[in-house]
Image 1 (cartoon, rainbow, N blue to C red):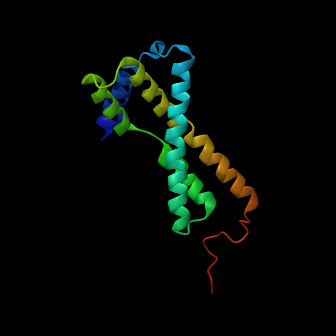
Image 2 (cartoon, rainbow, N blue to C red; image 1 turned 90 degrees about the horizontal axis):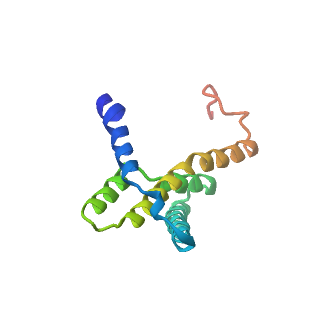
Length: 136
């Protein structure tokens, strides 16, 4: 596990990054497409997760955080994108847009989750949140 997560996984991410040619995203239409794809991907996952969580009676703050966490992309998406590029299903511009979308959605996860929990922490009363306290 240490060899895979410590050496091989970072090398895979580096090889994916080296295959990505951001210079192929040229013009206002291409950058607009990147914004549209990113917004659509985020909106669908976040709103879908919030709706289902609220139907399951999860509090709104926690369902929002769950939506942000579900929105992050990872290894599986990069594998699918690399296979699509290798099989010539995705051209260089589409591949670059999808990789940048995966990066943007992954990088925005941590700040958004921390922002929601900091706001929640200000509103909450942690006076009775100890291990020793039991409901008797």
